[in-house]
Image (cartoon, rainbow, N blue to C red; front, side, top):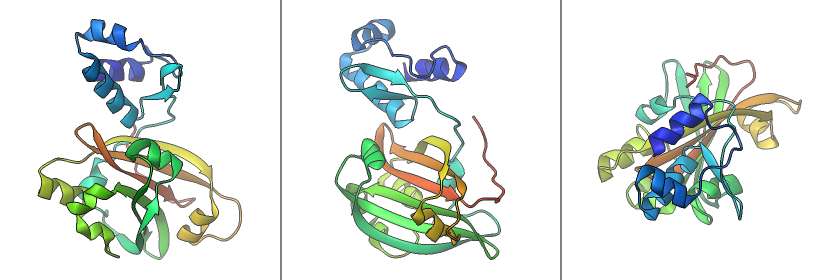
Length: 221
């Protein structure tokens, strides 16, 4: 079911904001139980393909672009890059983060990436608290080696994958300006938001903000 609906969305057979069939219709179409359909729709939500509108149903999400993000799970830097750690702290999940990992306290981590003397990227991640029992380094003021996703995979035996990476743009916020070392002018910045899951269980999300004028190597899909 998930593979088929993904293909329909990516091919344009299902358009942005088009309503998905009801649970009963999906059960009959794919020969699944109601629980299996709920889990499949939950995975499509986590991957960014669909969204719910309370009392109305589930709809296809309009997305500007998807990029491949597996390389960030395998290694935290690329050649010529240098990580500068900013902080790790307990914090309430922002609204968009709570949509994926649930409301309440989580671990928020922030860092920047330099290429030479220029800050190329500022990123933050929000990770569910139960992940800390497997990766206690999340609470430490230093990067996980090589990444928290890789450490969790190695220790738990449950692979962590980037199930959705969505690219968008916005006017830089005050936090963006500070992290990227920019002055108070108005800048448009590219952002990417990544959802990380083990199986169909979303355990963390991340947001990267890229400095204006910096070359990017994003693989469209």
